[in-house]
Length: 395
Image 1 (tube, helix red, strand yellow):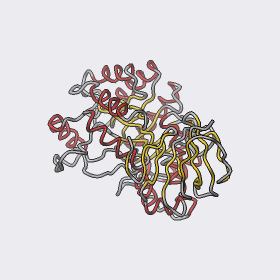
Image 2 (cartoon, rainbow, N blue to C red; image 1 turned 135 degrees about the vertical axis):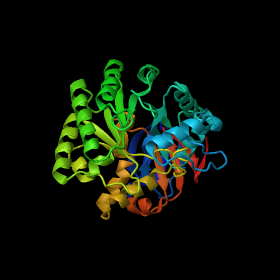
Image 3 (spheres, one colour; image 1 turned 180 degrees about the vertical axis):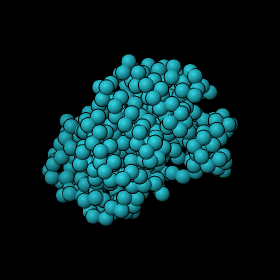
Image 4 (tube, helix red, strand yellow; image 1 turned 90 degrees about the vertical axis):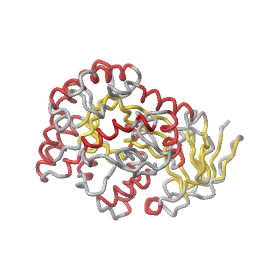
């Protein structure tokens, strides 16, 4: 017997179907009206159906969302923002379960059902941030799945003891260890990367490097990452976050790097920020390089921007890369859904038999219309359970 049948919905804008859900997974898709299964029935009203959104790059531990407005302060450099955050976070209760829970609820309300979140691990807070994010996820009863990257926001080599904390985080259940600008922040890219990859090999986890350095300095670090990924046998377990330099390089140099990164099995995540160089997304797609979209920080001590809506991030990606055709616009939405499956260790994430029943309904003519307007999420299903209706959470 089916647990639930979601009737009369249009997957990816195609012909209307009924989606039969059992044990939290999609069991079958049949023509609308053809499902005669007993059990609960939920009328989809002919709405457009998409898979749940996957946020491939978030910082749910950092936000002050839910508190009175916090005016931005600090110097507008990476080092300045790090220092400002370190000075002010304790007064705002960051990290904390309540802060993280508020962010996760906004994600879920916007149809995000899986998150890969970087969580600060440093000498000031140890592993408290990881525990806070886990507590927030548990409070939602599994409605949103959260994978954790242990993130050394304040540096690695320049802060003795952080490598040990990252090792503890990997033993504590983090699925990846992170790094930050090995050259610009630690001024020793070889030592930072060697330390991170040693932990990854020994603990069986991945590596995810925030890399803001531009031009050839960034390209040099891409090469170091690709070489270590091959040597450690970590294909499919290493990601570069941001990696702005890739879009700044001459075409020939760019193509050579793409070949090297793709051969090593390195993925990429981007938040498509305004003013950055477009990524060579076609070259990445054609080489099979996974690309994911994320919200980055939301209303935190780095920036007041963000609302948790991955469709808006996909639209930012489309604008930054001047996407116009229906096929390309559809690809932007795929980056926020099906193509991001690997970022949260899913083999498949789609409206297909066998996939986890993470389904989002919106009132839109087609996928492209949904991307342009980012309409309210009329229904959000996570693991076969309806968790939001009419833009409001039920959990």
